[in-house]
Image 1 (cartoon, rainbow, N blue to C red):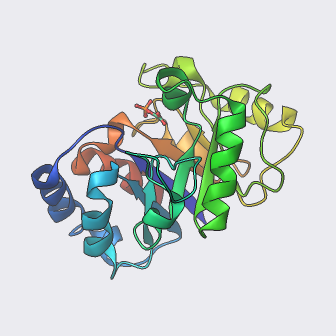
Image 2: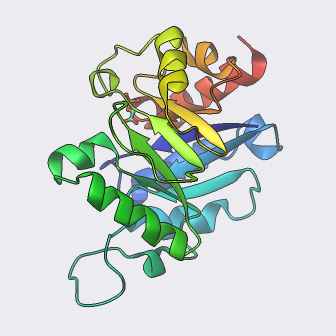
Length: 221
Ligand code: PGA
């Protein structure tokens, strides 16, 4: 089983999401189950819509891009774990853009990790360097080197594998790579037995492009 995760970041409104899904859901490998699991992570405001539209596709899941470190309570604007229940199956935690723009440090990310577990969400815990701590027993760990995100400069497979071998603690379920994954390099990652999935930003924004990556993998193009 390989995981292909779409991180839409802060892109799309309802109409654009509708168009994306209308196109994407009609593709062959989306209609019939395969040995991949696709996790779509839209902005919070679109979670409900995406969840509803993808319910009947057993190999499609929905993920949130973040979760509050606080519980339910007087925290205006926060999206806590309880509010995500039923809307998301997975949650991305500690993406380097949040660490950078929202000043989330390791302590906050680890709190968010605990909140996710409390509410039955599966955390996809992102790190960009070997120094960043990983929660004990983390199921999904995503290696997201900052210089490769959105830059068109992906890490080569050897450096991703080396990063994995240097991890003091290996993820229980899946080791994910993210950073400029595209149609021409996706197989170099997914064909490697160490790598269980990819996290895709830019190339997930167009349903056609995103599907072409999936198709490349499944057809071994
Ligand atoms: P990218 O983003 O595919 O645009 O490089 C990856 C990420 O941020 O996870």
